[in-house]
Length: 449
Image (cartoon, rainbow, N blue to C red; front, side):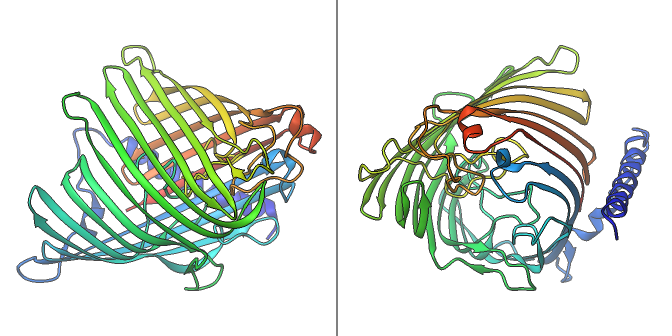
């Protein structure tokens, strides 16, 4: 099947989903219908309803068009792809305290330049599978979970899923939590990240990495509308790679986040410090990030003016016996735009942006994002948080900029349609390394139940 026929088929699927969405959106408000998906939730398996089963799933179709990814410093030079992802899950509740959850995923890449990576092609595998025990204790409840599971903390700056690729991130291990309320809890975990493979039920945890930590979140006593997170993460990683070289990494991260809303204002500010060993070098790295905005609810389209900013440390001297490059651990990806142009290491960036609510369920976001190295001596780090060749040193810090647009429509609880376009232009430092301007476009249709 030619590329054009495959693209036409993907477009037909998208239009069919859009038609379904329009039908849902045109339903008169005074004729509510019972959600047919409810029949798959809380299915009683015993007469007393003590044992229940909930089924869920998702189908996502995502065409992508990439020209000169990572400023043309990554291969292939062009990639027009079609990604198809499907989930099926079963959530078994055995009374009020026991739970078993299983989720199977299939990620297909029928159109892809070259061999798709494991994050895009995973024919069939266990994405999540864990047992969970929750028991009431003083001032809350205690949850213990063991098995394969997704994890996301806070704003997902350091630990989160990667939703844009076909295969989201998962971990194998144990997690426990003391839950005082929906807004106050402390989590502890000891896990290994799962490495996706392309075959059938062949994913496995990475024996070269161990990840553990504590994460607490709570409203701030005495300060209404302000919430705080405090955390510690530990990481052991064999053969870690930075511009300084390759060595075993033993890294510790301590950090805090303050976030909340008041009137039209919203804020999300986070800082972290890292220490440890990289081979024979001491690790001393840091990160400060902020997302702030103001929403004008009374103006047409309810615009929100926002500013995102990051300062993420790099290595000032590759031969000093100290590693200053921040490791963002397991962040949400993509981080700055759907183009996945840059990783959050050795970076300073700002991103003024505006979000418009064009219709009650349609939002448009436009942002501009200039990028600089934090340290000239260190490399420019790509989306896999690895140094890009020929980008260490040099006379300048300016990497380039990107302009991104994103349009998303959620006509119903179960359907999302969206698209994005990103254009980027390299600075002189990246041009000297062979970088060129490029663009990225993608659309997606997601049906969930």
